[in-house]
Length: 156
Image (cartoon, rainbow, N blue to C red; front, side):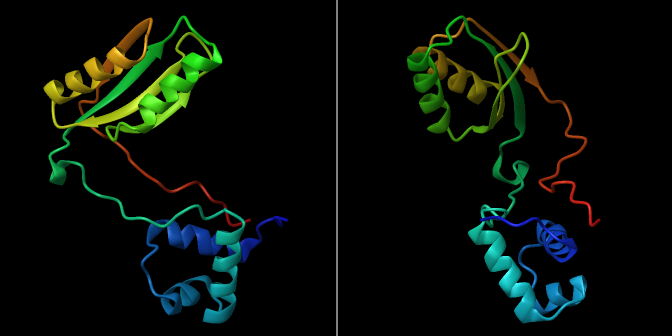
């Protein structure tokens, strides 16, 4: 059973979000504790799925994925079979960085990374061959103003 996070847990999480590769010794110093209690807390946070995974963040431009599109999707179909087909189609496409089901006039929003507009069009053509979609609007991000993977953790 999951227990509420205390200030030490929150401090550990806050520091790990910034740099999960830091040594246990460095982390313990930063949160004002010793290594063993911090390690035990991390193990519990992993076991309780508060920490879902540890990964690295790559620079999309360094990998020639310079185009970022936000794709707004409206569908006229909301049955289980359509949703299953749509979700399978999204999950197998690595260009889809994020996908959200929305409330309101737009049903889904996708964040799609591609090399350029031509690569995005290939993604789009492939998707609509596989899934019937009522309306798609693609918005090209001209500039990324803020990007973060850090959740807003308060220490109180």
